[in-house]
Length: 334
Image 1 (cartoon, rainbow, N blue to C red):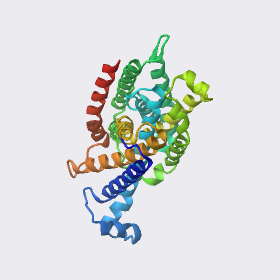
Image 2: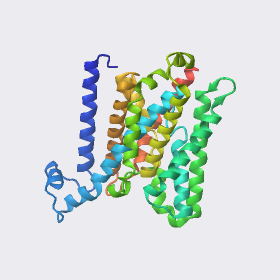
Image 3: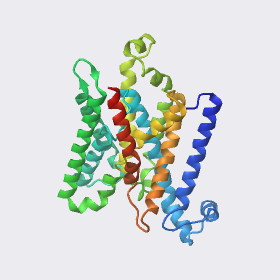
Image 4: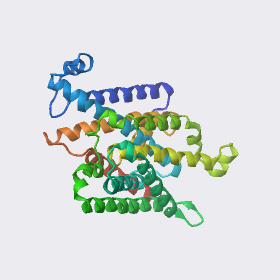
């Protein structure tokens, strides 16, 4: 763990460099590989007749921007969830929030023929809110408040329930199955910047508000009586955290579908490097989350070319072993 401010600053610069390299790799690698020179030409001397320039401008720039925003948003949402619940296993994916948003998105697409992310965003927010309410209700230990184990079990059950409902709707509506299949596995491809540009500011604003709450989030790790003694309105702070998680997770699902484990593993990676101070933890998580999803998306394109696997499959392969390790560690401490 980096302790001094200088060491943490160096770590932050390393994260920025990693993000830059991941973004360049996302723009360069794929079914049609390009050189760095071609990449620069496509950005600053665009030739509409050049197929490589066309691929970069029409596809790779948009999916790079989407992966960057979604990865950062899911990672920050994971930090908020773990701080809010004081549970190292908490994340929008594990606690069913992503699955709730997914179900409402699929319902809107299959029952009302909605297709644009801008049309589905409010359904995603509603689904994320419903799932969060169910999980927090079911996770309560009588007389003791929120139980980490009960919360995770409730999240797993709610996730299974909403994913099953989503699959059922798609089976009953075969015409929409192919167009919505990527939402079930998670993907950042096929989204033009024009289609998602109205949603990206939601993620940006939510992240900025979260960064302004570092003092409150640091205090949330203490007992409620101590927090209140320090003058923090616990109920209002937690309610704001829930709203921010719903905004981040709901927007991510509306844009890219069900991408799991980013919100779980990234906060632990950032915490291992920068410690628990949210002044460093939050920006580091945003940078690492964006870089991780960019790398996962690049890998997804290169595994079985010319086809690509959903990015949600890659993040699941990365996140499942860590989740099992954390679950075992948490169980041993209870």
